[in-house]
Every structure is written in structure tokens, then in C-alpha cells.
Image 1: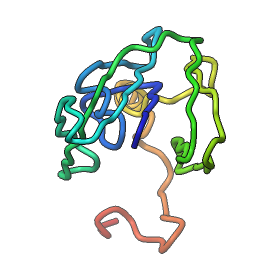
Image 2: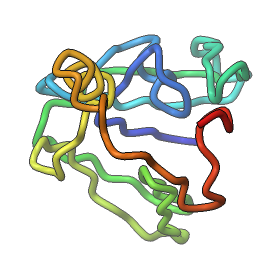
Image 3: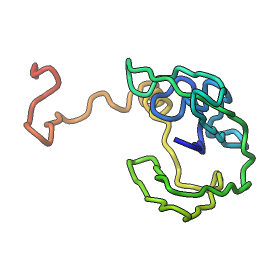
Image 4: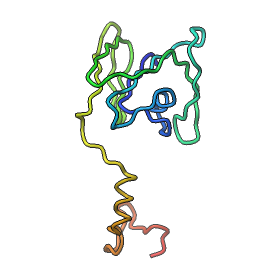
Length: 144
């Protein structure tokens, strides 16, 4: 990787987010994203160990990790891959450029922890009709 632009840089997450979040944390409510520039071991920088999936850590050489104000555009030049949440990717070929900007005007994002905590508080998941799994009809634990 050469450059990483994160809309959220969360240290406790997995994937690419901690590569920025462990040096420059940023959440959905912040008025900035995080730009991370990588380097080779021989070029110096900081060696960062970060979780990339549950229980799996990898090291990366980071030249810089800094805030990128909302609305500020950075230019990226290929070759490379633009990767997005949901495993969407766009190839960026040699000498091809892309302009990247962090905004907070994207789709709404559900906070699963908050949603389930509110559901628990209101007991909205209790006393519902019996549920059959769409795949095999099995109940949780096969008990009911």
C-alpha cells in the first residue's frame, strides 16, 4: 500500500481502520478523516503492529498518519486499487489519477451495539412469534 484514506480510523476495529486509528483516531462524528502514507522499511517511518482480522496482527511501515479535514481533496496516482467497504474495488492503472474526499453526507450507518442495546432496554425482541432459520429451519441451539 502507498496511501490509505479512512473515513473512520478506529483503534479497536479490525481491517484497515486500525492502521490509522492506532496513530490518529477518528470516528463517524469527527470533522476529519485520516490519511496514512506507507513506506518501505529502508525508508524509515514507524513500525506499527495492528489487528487486521480477529486474532491476526500484521506490521506496517508508516511514514505519516494525519488528519484530513472534511471536504479537502487528495490526489492519488496509479497503479493501485481503490478499495471500499463492502469489498468493492476499482483498479487504478499507471498514470491514472483519482481525487478522494472525505464527507459525512454518505448513507446512514446503523450502530449495531446501540440498536441492540435499545432493543434490549425496550424488550422488543422478547415474546415474538417463533423464528425458523431461512437456511435449515433450525432454532438457536436446536432446543425449541
